[in-house]
Image 1 (cartoon, rainbow, N blue to C red):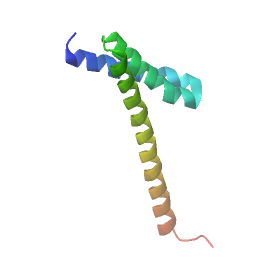
Image 2: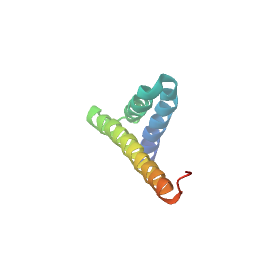
Image 3: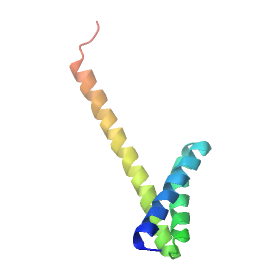
Image 4: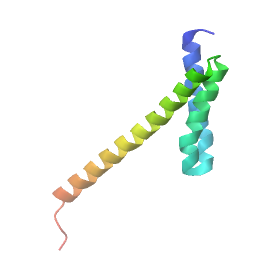
Length: 88
């Protein structure tokens, strides 16, 4: 299996884990991609340490995206309240 295929299997595993994790609530959205990325790395023939790094990267990526979206939403709410006049 070439390098590109190994990366694709890992990303597909994380995506599949996220889709399955949707059915298990909030915890599933965090744990699903981690398990999927680790499983994808195992399928690609990587060692446990490499699979753990992929899972850790998936978790940090999800948390970073969530924090980024929260910051953007708070900025938009702040701009809205600063520009819209009070109704009374």
